[in-house]
Image (cartoon, rainbow, N blue to C red):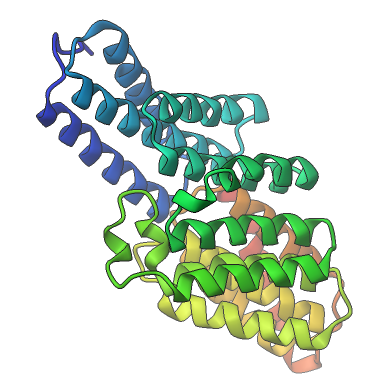
Length: 320
């Protein structure tokens, strides 16, 4: 696609609208289908930076918007299970673009995205080192940005089985979310996290990682309660979040040995997963399927258990 000779404000607004559509697609269907289109748009935006003229102010806006797009592409690739090098490359490009634009907020946001990927890949210590880059601009971050740092630190500490630090980070997340202004949803960088359901769910997933490896009934109960609250607040437009949350609730219930509760939760998660293409969802579905292979169900639940196992197998097979 040809780039304009000169980038003007309408071009910036058009690119922002494209990103909004990509983000909506990602939340509804996962990163598995749209990442190629996102990557193509990013390459075009970067080519425009090199080839087109612009006023200094518009150039900074374009760089900042391209950085946001790079963050979205990196996240979609991570969610789709792309190789680590490809995913990291998009995040690094986003950080470079944000740095050139002097956009502290977008730079910090992309750092938290990269931190999540590192934790998911079993590199929690490196994740904590990376998130230190976001903390370096702590004074400039709004409460929602600080809440997100709490989320990614909680996920990393949970992966390291550090219960005390995980709980501290969850508390940090909740504290700063409560301090966020009423108009936080309009923040162009952090507005997505102005949603209580998102905060409850994200930090709840960190608690889930910890609860599944600990013999702590109180923690498990608290995590289920938090994730249920998140699920009730997730609208249908974020199908991936709904599916991930309910599948993890089912995992916790299976961990408790509560098969009667885990089975309807698993069915609900599978229903939400229809049409979602996410390697993260596939991985969680496989964890739940493995847990349900090793449970002893009451006689009146055995047929239901067999049906749910088959449903989970179908969902896992449908992911790309």
